[in-house]
Image: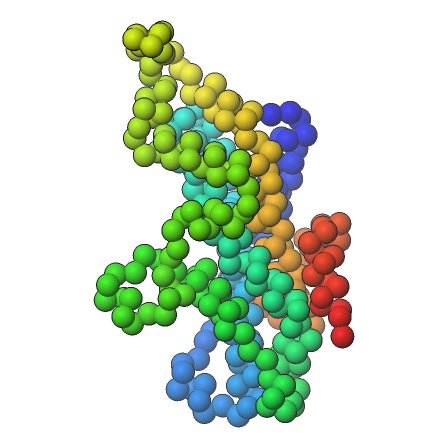
Length: 288
C-alpha cells in the first residue's frame, strides 16, 4: 500500500473512533401492536415514524461500530502476522459492509424523499388521514438489518419474510463491485479449508513437486492481498460509511432539540459537506 492508502484507512478509523466515543447509553423503546391500536391518528402517525427512525438510527450507528470492530480485527491479525486471522477478519468485514449497504443505502434515500412529511409526523402536526405517510419497504429493510437470520422451519411459519436472511451473494451483489466479490471468493478459499489454506506451508516447485517449508510468509501473503485489492477495500468502506453517516445527519435534522438522545455531535458530521451522496440527499430533503 502507498502512503495515501494508509492515510485513507487511518482517516476511516478516526471517524469510527469519534463516533463510538460520542455515544454512551441509548435506550430504544417500542410499543406493542395492541397499544398501537389504542392511539389517536396523530399519536399513531408520530409513533409509527418515531419507531422507524429509531431503527434507522440503530442501522446507521451499528454499521459504523461493527465496521470498527472488523477493522480492528484485520489490523490485529496483520500486526501479529496471522494470515488465517487476517483473511477471516477481512472476509467478515466485507460481509458486514455488504449487509449494511444492502439495507441502509435505500433507507437514506426513502427517508430523504419523505423528509417533510416525516418531520410533520414527529412534530405531531395535525394532518388529514390521506396525507399520512407510511413505507412498508422501509419498514422491511430496517427490520431485515436488525433481525434477519437463517430461520428455522418453525420460525418461517411465524415470521415475516423480512426476518429471513438472504444469501451472502445477494448482499455482495448490492455493492456492484466485481473486485470485492473476487476478493471475497479468494478469502473464502482460505477460511473454508481448500488448497489455498495450505499456501503458508508449501511451495510449488513444479507441476509434479511441492515442498513443505518452515518460512514465515504470512506477512507476504497479506501484503499481496492488500497490494491487489486495497482500492476496492477502500471503496467498500466508503460506500458503507457514507450512508451510515448520512443516516445520523438525517436523524439530527429530524430532531431539532439538541437534547434528543438520538442526535449525534454535528462536528463529527461536517465531513459530509464534501460528500456527493449527501449533497444529493440534501436536495431531496430540501425539495418542497
